[in-house]
Image (tube, rainbow, N blue to C red; front, side, top):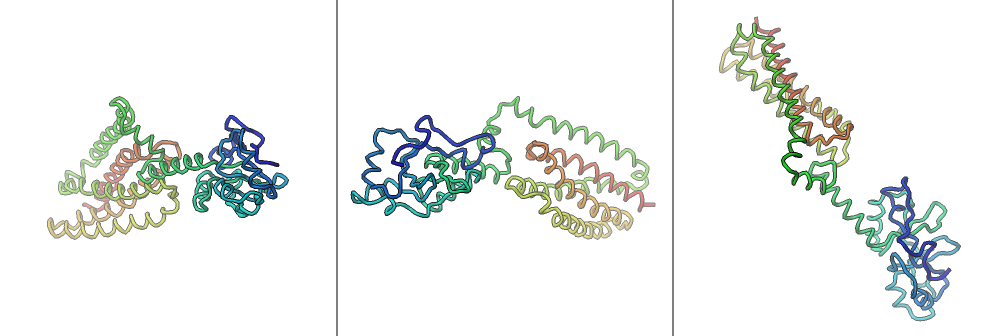
Length: 335
């Protein structure tokens, strides 16, 4: 074997197939110079002339098609004539398998400061080289995606930028349907309140606390929703935070309920209303936490960006349940 291209000399030959999308194999090429370990460096450099390569930054040193090292052009040019390639090659280069993810492959090459990354199969047979420009493209693409995820988007940063520059028609298309759902929810909330007209007439003070219970439940749910959406955007599954977040929501509800009940009793002197408000806050905050975890997860599983839909939809569900819980508690407590 001499310093000639691999099996595919031109046209950017790559080892790729549908099943290898996003892997090292999808970016590898055989159109790179190869050499034997016992071959003189001056012969290798001479054989480079007259051939087209996807990349000539590094020479793959193989014995019987198995990779035994990599030799950079800098090392070959710095060696004295007659020196064997084995004397200047890196005998322990970073290698990856064809199925290694592209991000792992790129970082492997960067951490070892190699101008190229060899791809070998389980038997050590050389399957191609990922050139520097493709390594850089992978790093930039992964960096772009990571920044987008940290910003709370499930797509790429380019998609996020496109969304920011959308025309008014597209903005309406993405947002208005969710807000229409919110409008329907508001109408339904009014119907729920109307169903408890009798208890509200008996104790008008109960109506004063409807906005407070709804607001606090929404606030607790929004905190959980933000945490879950951010977690999903960086690959943290909901199940990892579900128990701790549920307990947190319950404890927040207990704390708010204790404070609200004490203040209600002190300012208005009505123990029954204070108890109803306290019970409602414990239940509403707990329910809001669960809803705020389930909806972003469900939208994500359906392929819908939670950033658009989870807020309006969660607000509707949380408001309805908060009003229902509060008025049901009031009906049970107030005589």
